[in-house]
Image (cartoon, rainbow, N blue to C red; front, side, top):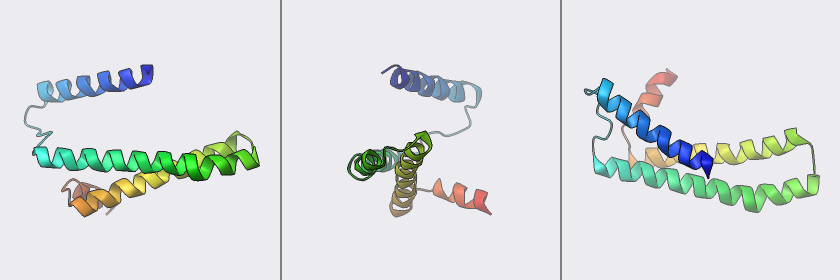
Amino acid sequence: LSTSIAGIVNTVLLYWGLRRYYPHVVLISSPRKLVQITIASGVSVGVSLLCYRLLILPMAANLAGPLASRTLHLTLAVAVAGVLYLALLALFRVEELQLLRHLKK
């Protein structure tokens, strides 16, 4: 709970700071884009949680391995979420994805 509260406070302070010190930066250009990004985030986190609970936890229970093994399993669930998130952004044709493509070059 405390981590969630800290995340919300950090987000609000970051938004406030960007609006105050960099007013020329457009943070939310359209409500539609905000909804698309929120949907992509929610779906990717949900699928990651489902992947972790249904596939990785039973596998980890059978292995009962060291911390490194459990960390690898968690990393796999997070990687699934990341790939799904990027795929959904591409499907929704969110323009900010072009920034990542330019960074890759």
